Image 1 (cartoon, rainbow, N blue to C red):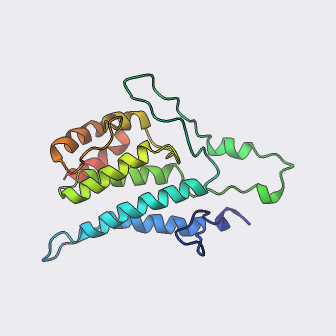
Image 2 (image 1 turned 90 degrees about the vertical axis):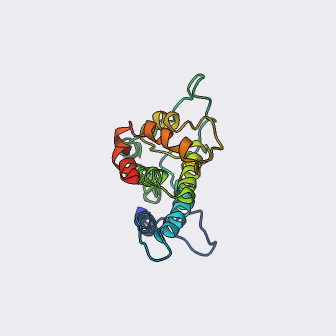
Image 3 (image 1 turned 45 degrees about the vertical axis):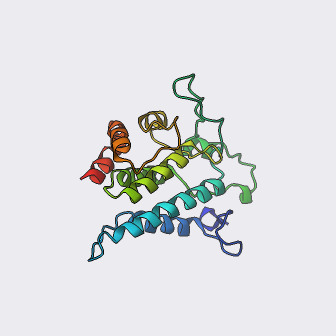
Length: 208
């Protein structure tokens, strides 16, 4: 079977599994829900969708990373940024992964399960950083706690993070357990992260 038929090994239900195509659709639906800003007489009802999507993205990200076999899943624990920086785990490029296959490799082993990639990682982090600039304390807190876990967890370690060291330093994640609902603490950190070009637009969009 090809990569499109690989099953997500870690499932929300032991009797159900997702193909890579189905996983992509779920991620797309969750990222779309992060843009729900519907309002009615009760207020920002779209925030309920955004909070649910944040939780869903985190859960599916861990499942997808664990089910993929094209990059390392763990690293040495993150050390304080004020001390000697931890050695980065280098993720091989797609070309390097393809070239590593031997001609004599059985056909059944020539397909790798890949449920997570560079573009998806950037989209998830961008969506979370946008919500970190949210005016609602509950949404901001949920986004901050999710970002903190994703960027500091070492098993599995989130791969493909753009400018990982800069982002961790900007959000001061060497000191964990922050109250992300506190705007006096969160917004100055967000202003540090805005200096990372790839995250400039989503952060600005969240603040506006």
